[in-house]
Length: 82
Image (cartoon, rainbow, N blue to C red; front, side):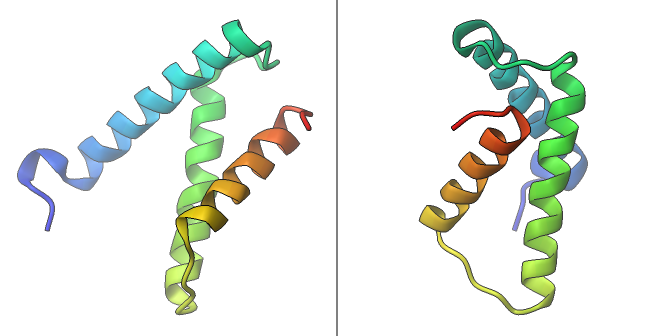
């Protein structure tokens, strides 16, 4: 169970901030091309949330390795890498 400070609203905001910060660093260090890190963070987080929600509703199981592959393919596809 989540502690009061880790409830959904705070966790979602914290995840968004950290993902946007990661994207900004990747933009500077790796040359990723996008206009707004906050918008891209929302797009990525929404995609991952939907993937997990539908997986849960369908009784699917996944692994860390499979999720890492999905995230890498998502980043590569969105940013034209790979």
